[in-house]
Image 1 (cartoon, rainbow, N blue to C red):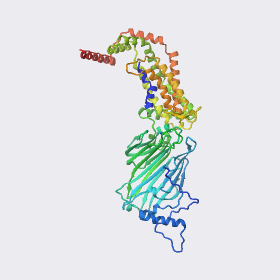
Image 2: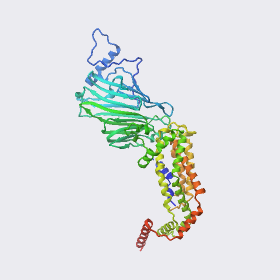
Image 3: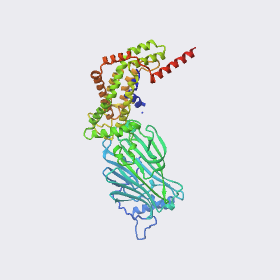
Image 4: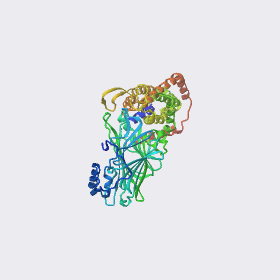
Amino acid sequence: MEEKRFDPYQFIGFVLIALILTWMLYVNRPEETVISDAQPTNTEAVTENQQPSPIQLNDSLKRINLQSTFGIFSNWMVDKGAKIQKIENKHLLIEVNPKGGVLSLVRLKEYSDYLDRPLDLIKDGNNKFNIQFTTKDGRRLNTKDFYFYPSLTNDNGKQKLSLKANINLNQYLEFIYRIDPENFLVDFSVKSTGIASLLDKSEPAILEWEKSAYRNSRSIDYESRYTELTYGYEDDKVDYLSLSSNDEETVKEVRWVSFRQHFFSAILIPEETVDRLIVTSENLSSDESLDEVFTKKFSLRLPLAYKSGEFESNFEYYFGITDYQTLESYDRDLESSIPVGWGIFGWLNRFVFMPLFGFLSSFLPHGFAIILMTIIVRLAMSPVTYKSYVSQIKMKVLRPEIEELNNKYKDNAVKRQQETMSLYNRAGANPMAGCIPALLQLPVFYALFTFFPVAFELRKKSFLWADDLSSYDSVLELGFNIPFYGDHVSLFPILASIAIFFYTQMTTGQQAMPQQPGMPNMKVVMYLMPLMMLFFFNNYASGLSLYYFVSNLLTITLMLVIKNYIIDDKKIHAKIEENKKKPKKVGGFSARLQKAMEEAEKQRKARGK
């Protein structure tokens, strides 16, 4: 029969086949520059008896050159000689460039990339930040061109880095970074003092943030599938830009924007909901070459509100791991940026598989935790496996009689269907009984399919020959690339495909696969599934392939136990024969279906006349 085309493993196989600027300026000086809060203004001059130093003279020349272009704002454009500033805590090392007040380095101190280099979310100019605004005399200014005076202090246990671009002591634009000792959050504020009368409030100030996502995994293709721009908007909605192509969206009522790099995220969290902003995503990767540096480039543009005529906007940055429990602990709905599945799939992951795996991996190596969780899941689903197998046995027993009916009524499809339904009814067999259990397993199957790729706990955890369960388990480097497969051979996908092949052979062997005119040979299609899965999973996380291998191996074992020790084919055959002798009244859906077919047959004959 045809119900096995709905087998969850094969069904998901089809779905899977159908579903990764060096601009920054470092100002390096051979000596430290002492920075004072009392900065000179552009109105100060050198007296007759005071000999200007080369630095002072150069600074004065810059101001003269800029004065004609930027007027009173020319002081913001002059390089004051400040060095890169550092703030850090337990998790983060952050460097800020006084030119533009932009983050030039964000390093996650406890982690490394796939080449065991320090894991930097921001470095070497991959991060661009700017606020653009208009003055009353029509000048369009950009903070990326400003030079800021830094001042590092302690603020209630937080390191506070203040950066001021001064017109004079009472007129300035200030960026403030604060970092807590214990978490991944960085407070960021933008405020101005004394410049309200100089700003054109009819033109909104625009905050621009652009960041290229560094490659952190061996498989850039696999990492790109889980690297995306996600945003939370309105009360509880979450959406994302295209994974596979360049995309741009205008979004309203935004709560946060996440630049997710698979297992690591950079998230901007406004203090107040943003009425409207523009987000964009651009693919940068093209192949699996080790020369590829970036996966994608993300950007956002959001308007800044004026308060009492001045700038005053507060944000939080999250620079850290894309771990569900960690993000959830900040109580800002940031965990919604992780694609754990929608509807029942997400529910299963959040309330069943994540807690279960977290518990098992707390006292077991992660590879054994996957195996034990797979055993628990398969045992929980064993009643469904039993019902499915019993249905297959019944259909196997009835196969000769069904083939006889097919031959007898080969020219009368309606009569053939009526007699087949009658046989099923009298024998107490249901052709849908094998399909329904398979469909019941689908939510579990798909939930686990979404769980393993986003399980941060698997990153850099080894098992057997796999040195990283979150990446592929290469046992052979080919030295050349095979389209859709890759340049290496992963062993766990091979083992999983072999197990799927034998599982498919066992299930299809229990039932007929009728070949209808114009339809592909279903047995051939079924046997192609393991091959397609092999190609698809060669670059996927080895933890996922390990799960599929163990899951199918356990399913085969359960079916053999059921066949040899629980189910007696002769008893089932005798029961069917006994049921066939009992008169049964056709009712319900079967009766309505039979009546509908009879009506259709009458209409066909009437048209023939």
